[in-house]
Image (cartoon, rainbow, N blue to C red; front, side, top):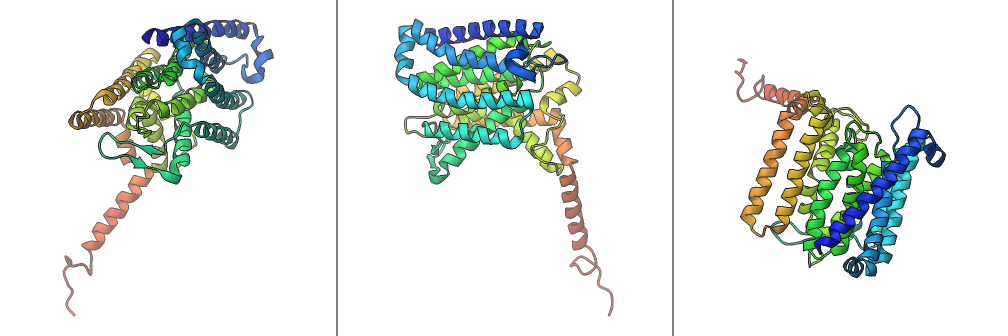
Length: 381
């Protein structure tokens, strides 16, 4: 069984390398613009990463099934489902490609992602109930479609948000995809594991062009695609025998993009800014300001991603409430160290909303000790 996954990963890597090499040559000769339009401007590094990854993800499982009887046994009965899912992926990829080319509005991008995520829900990738490391399963009932779509949208855009420096989004995706593939294989979802390994192999092939100093970018077409595939497949990968999704596993596996995205929303809200308006205060920006160069920054983020992904695999295999609790304490401690070391705790404490809140509390404290309060000295009548 392991050979099937390794074969798929290797095929995806090879396809991404060949496609990437061809696109690299075309971009250097200026001919790639004939195929992809103005997205590849002469003054910028080309953004064809999404194209090479999409081709690898689409073709590798089919080639693996054609080459290996074992892969065929797993994948052949699910080809129809895969082609439907690939159609949703193509929509997300196309939206990102259009954004790379013409710069789409957030409404256009959101609408396309909503349609694609709804199609995934209709295909059976659903969070209708979820299980926690301890306690009974929780049914979502009529909220199931909403939670599923929001889940997919969140991770699609979280990978896009961390794609701010060479190699970051790709490396984080590989760690998460391999961890989720291990979980899916053990949970008897071999087709999902096969697709996750195809994704990991495609991204690994593209990293040859994306490691610093990068010669090509993922672009929105690539970053949105990676997050969409991870968000969608993580649902089925973490689905147990009772059809409940053990959400803690994908949340931990995708801990780095989740942390960066949630932190971005909180700090923007704390400064009374629009949560969807970008800034230069992501984790990779803070690491740069701390003095890390491109490779040091990448190594640090890869270590963090590896720790989150490893913890997700352990969480899946561990069947002890005590050990699960210890693991969560360790992870929360890690998050606290990251926030403190990078200065986010101080930034949030000194944010405009926090300052107003402190002033309000200070005024309240002063008012309780002022004239007319129980602690004030009464004037004679």
